[in-house]
Length: 327
Image (cartoon, rainbow, N blue to C red):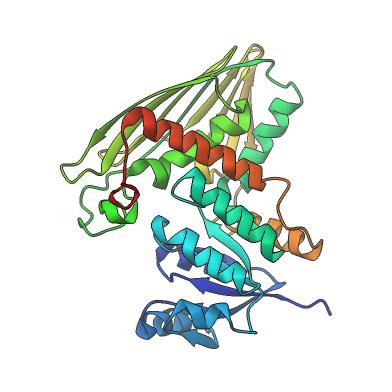
């Protein structure tokens, strides 16, 4: 019988709850441990998912011999230090996006992974979504010709969250861009690559948190119109237009259950319902890499994370988005 991959959960909040629910669907996964800054928080999560090893601080989990890989789901600004500590303890790491707050942090993380000979991947789950995989394959096969236009947005109303929340507290790398703007940027990068030029404009909360950002990515023969915001909802249907047709990733596109192609006056719909909460495909990729003893994924590599962080930094530079701990 094949041994199971033993997971440790860091930061048992809402995202970790959805991810861990999907881990329960995997026959080759064992949810071995959970850690939080306080033992009661960790114990509550452990009781919910029947986790045996429970820790009231992160370091105890990192040195535990019951864990093969750590899933990090803390606020953005803690990602780098926690991931490096885990890797220095010999643990593989899947870290929620963004991997680091800026490119310098991502570079430091990749260097730590190489130094310690462990697997590291940014948890950009949409890369593995079946509908996004489908449109990528259609485009790569020339199914809608040469791409010249892409539109993607991600927005919801978040102003009712507390000023100490990860969305609105600048000390936690708050704002729409790193939390949800990363998704439209990712899609443009996945389909069109690195742009030649970027324009970006943001509006801000009185406490300095970026609340909405509009972006134009300029390519040699294409443009991408991107948006993220916390001040209202948006439709969240992604559109990719080529010389021979159009592709649509249906709302909410980052976790889509279907996509469609309009070509030659006909519409073809691809129904691709996701399993669980949608993290299953990301987990499958991690398990596949670990079994093959690979230290990074071919589908979302270290270079991909570096490129994405570079784009985020460029948008922040254009729009004037800064965090207090970076000054």
